[in-house]
Length: 284
Image (cartoon, rainbow, N blue to C red; front, side, top):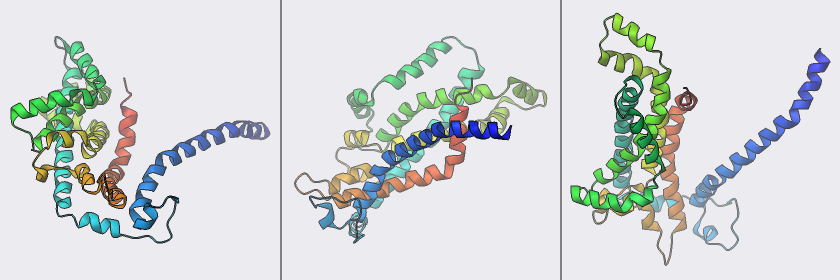
């Protein structure tokens, strides 16, 4: 029996090695732009502008980071990005949780139509709505404010978040809700003290996507922040170094690296709940 199992193990090994090799190749392909960005941030100006780029540097320098942090407005841009991304994450998570609970636990008219509208909203390209949103923000008096960045991102984050959280809410047995009511718990107490902790992994998963989308946004920041640069976010800081006549590629790479660090830190902090959240999203 041992010999048979050993033969079967060798028979399965080539397929397993091929799968692992493919996964490794994909990981390298995805990570290479990130490596090149960090490398460019530490390269001296002479190597960055060389006609023969090399995937390494023998003389690392932090001059590009000095130029980035030497910008007076960079700190303000960083704080603005934190405010926008943090507001989008908190508001979209709470609203999506309540909406997902409503469409899952309650039966009401046009419920299916509402769910289809959430799905259709995901299919509309953001670029196609930028101009209408510009006029809407202008009519609301929100141009050149952080509100013009927060509100659209909340609107675009909600459909995906609601659809993902439906699986988590639906996965909580209704018997648990009935038992809570029998024990004297009110609907609000069940909602926040029982249901909310159970769907927290799903909230974390949706929060990651909302945070990345709001943090890396350039289109809305460029379209809605026109004259008041004090309301700009970090992606706009890249334009300080990207000059058509004489671009500072080292500054661009250093600023991009600094922008990436909060996303990586946020991802590392929530990675465990993110994995369980992505797995729970497929529950029926």
